[in-house]
Every structure is written in structure tokens, then in C-alpha cells.
Length: 305
Length: 305
Image (cartoon, rainbow over all chains, first blue to last red; front, side, top):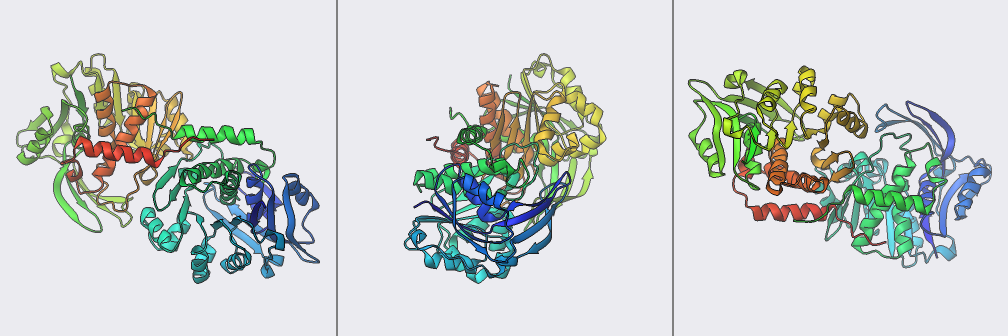
């Protein structure tokens, strides 16, 4: 059946203090599916682009065995575009412009043969659309969901409905604080889990990630990076690596979810090493495995005494 | 021979948004030695107080088998006092006043019988004084050192001399960035190690700690704390737990140093749960061990696959 991914497919223009790219491949579904493609196949993307979406990007995704039958191409339409500029520390950015274009009227339609998908990754889109996807699914087993400040502030009620229906929520620390109205992350996590989130993962950038479930709190280290080229898509890439590994192993135990967090972090570390999706285009499972083992060793303590 | 601790002994007045204490027991040597006392004995403190230093505080330290023969009591002198006020997030604080008093002319004299001390923890004092301590030591094996922004900015040259002569430097993330003039912590760590620091530990508060040595980078998790009462002394307490465990085990291998980092974090987590030294006054080694195991489990991944 494969992993179902719903999200945006976009053209990103990104400036950092050191370089820039124009109309590069971007969007949450793009990063999620490219990242997941190193673990599993098939990956089915549901999203929307305009007629102007470059053939070369379609080719790139198809080369990674990503099924684009669910990708609507709107005749005469323009693809969603986003432009952003990172500050010197690469932790903060300004959005220069957002052109929703065909994304404005996006209505995610899950093709009939994918409605029985068991594993689903809902990229960061309007919670109203996330709910529409959920309504089309027939008995899913494991739903992974992302969101962002914009929806937490603007569509809280709809987002709360989504949260009650997903298994894993993946957000960053500032989103967690905002969602719970609570500065202490541990308290915020409890409050978010009380909204109905079974498993909560909070990404903390250079400080790693935290996982909260009924039975456990798990702290995953960050990869020690000296150079970050472009943080765009790191969160989606995390979600993709996480989802891909879970789908590959078909194991949703908490111990396996911990490993999936490390795989998510692993993929995100490759993502930020290059502009746009470049860091995810030419990996091998062997390289992914090597870095995963590096991650494990970073936090490993020989438990004598 | 015991663990030799050199640092300040002070009376701290602390305000948080929730409560306050006046003239509580404080100072780097105090926190270090109380923290280390749960691992080992004897602990020898070299420091200075005035005649006004409360007998009850002397008693408290002696009850923890801390040897105060090296604590100079200056006749007619006043003890070092510090007052600070924490902001709402408890991460930032303003110093309300600093009265050096007898600390202004402190000249650390290591008693003859302690000059052959093998394990030494140099608390956060003027690097000029740290050098004077080092000059009095006869063939030390393992020296752990703390410092702070004030000395990094004001006594850089002397501090650099200290760094070449110690085995472990323990600082926080902002101090590391300042010392290296580099915002990226991983780069900063490399630069600091290039100054001659064998092993560098960078504390990151709610984000845990990082250890850098020739052969390894290690990431230690933070304890998931919902309530922090008073962060004063957490860094010294970390250094004390670290030093106490190293002294107890007499093992300076990198694997054991990693465990010592977790024990340092363990003790710091007890420290911040209460005002002043209260959190360190009535522990047991059993409770320390329990929390140490909690720490290990937080970052543990079952390494299947």
C-alpha cells in the first residue's frame, strides 16, 4: 500500500547570509517524501502544483520512486511560491513573500486505491485540509502530523480536532510553547498530550529533539554541525525520515519510535548541509545508516556502575 | 588525600518571581563541596570568610564531612555577599549587588599536607588566584576548572594560562561562545580545545550538556524539570558532582568522564529544585543513583537494526 504523504509542493527562493537560490524545489510533501524515500517505497504524494512546475523536479521525485498520481496539476495555474531570508545565525528568518497560487484552492483528494493507506504523514497544511484527508481514510493505523505557528494562531479549533485523530504530532519548541501557552517545555508537552496527542515530538534544532508518550520521555541528541547551509525543510525532512522508518519497520512500539526519532534527526542533518533539497538527492541507505550510528554513539553511555 | 576544592564561600540573597531568600549559604566552593560530598570524602575546602559567617553554615558543611581547615576566617572581616534577581523565565538574572569584602584580598594558601592533592576542583575565581593555586600543587593528576564571563572579558591572558594547565574546563554555552568569539558551539568547542583544554564540558541548561575531547563528542540529556525554584549554584553543583564522581572512581578514562557528566547533571537537577543549597543538604547516595539511572534512561536507545 505504501506511505501516504499529503502536503505542499512549492518553489522556494531562499537567501542566507552566504548564498541564495531561486525557485528551488520545496514544499512539505516534497521534503517528507524525498526523506522517506531512503527507507521505503512506494511513497504516494497528494498535493497540487501549477502547469509551470518544472518537469525536471517531477523527474527528480520519480527517480526516488515517489508516486505522483495524487499530485494535481492545475491547467494554467501557478505553483505555490515562498521566499525567505535567513538572518546571520540561521535560526531566524523573514518571509519575503508567499504566493499561494494553486495552493489557495487546494482540495486534497485521496485516490480511491490509497484510502486504505495504513501509514499517513500529514505535512504542514491548513488543519481544515488535514481533517478532509482524515475523513477520506478508511481505517488508518498510524498518522503522523506536522503543523506550524500560523495554524496554531489562526485555526486552533480545527487543529485541536486534528490532534485528537493523529498518533504522532511533530512540532518545534516555539510551536509547542505557543500551542500550550506555557514557556516550560515539559509542562507544555503534558498539556499538548492532554489534547489527545498520543506521542509528541518536539524538535529543538541544535539541541536535538524530545519525545513524550504515555510511558516515556526520550531525549535525542543533535548532530554536531559546524556548518549549516540552509535550514529550509529540516522539519519536514525530520518527519519524512521518521515516517519512512516507521513504515519500513511496521513497528509502532515506543522503542521503535525512539529509533525513528533518531532517523528523523539523521535525515534533517543531511538536509541542512546543502541548499534546498540538494542534501537529500544523492544519499544512500548506507550513508544514512552510518550517520544514524554516529547519532547513537553521541549519546551513548557505557552503563557500568 | 581527598578532593581539594578552591573557590568562594558566600552569603547569597536571591529573588525569583515566586520567592526570595536573604543571606543564604552560597559560593562556588560551597556548592562544589556539598555536591561532591555525596560521592566521596574527605573534601578539603580552601576559601575565605569573615567573622560574621554563621556558625550554622560551618556546621552544615562539617555535617557533610567537608574539611574546613583551609577555610580562612578573617578577624573583623565581612563575608563575600552577592544579591541577584531572576527574571520570569529564570534563565536570566540581574546582579543587584556584589560586596567582595574579605574576598577582595583573598590569597588562597594550600595547607602543606594538601599540596600533594591529586584531584583538584578550581571553582570560579579570578584566574590569577587559580594560577596561584596551581603553583602550590605538587604533581596533581586531574584538575577541573570553572570560570565565567567576567574573567573571560577581564582576565583573558591569565585565563589562557590556566587553561593550558587544567584537564577539564566546565563552562556554559554563552561563556563558550564568548571565549571563542564564535556563535557555533561545535566550532567554538574546537577553538577552546586548541587553547590547550584537554576535555571541555559545555553546560546548556535545559538542553543538557556537551563534552568534547580528543576522541569524542558526547551529548548528555537534561532532566525534564517542570519547576525550577532557584538556578543559583547549578553550575558549581555540576562541577561538584562531576569532580566527586571522578575522585570516587579514580578513573579518568573518557567513558568514565561521560558518566561523571551525567552525575554532574544529576546533582544540578537537585540543586535547582530548591532555594540556595537546600536541595543538596538532605540527599542520599541512593536518591542520587536513582536519578542518575533516570538520566541514562532518558537518552537510551535500544540498538536493534
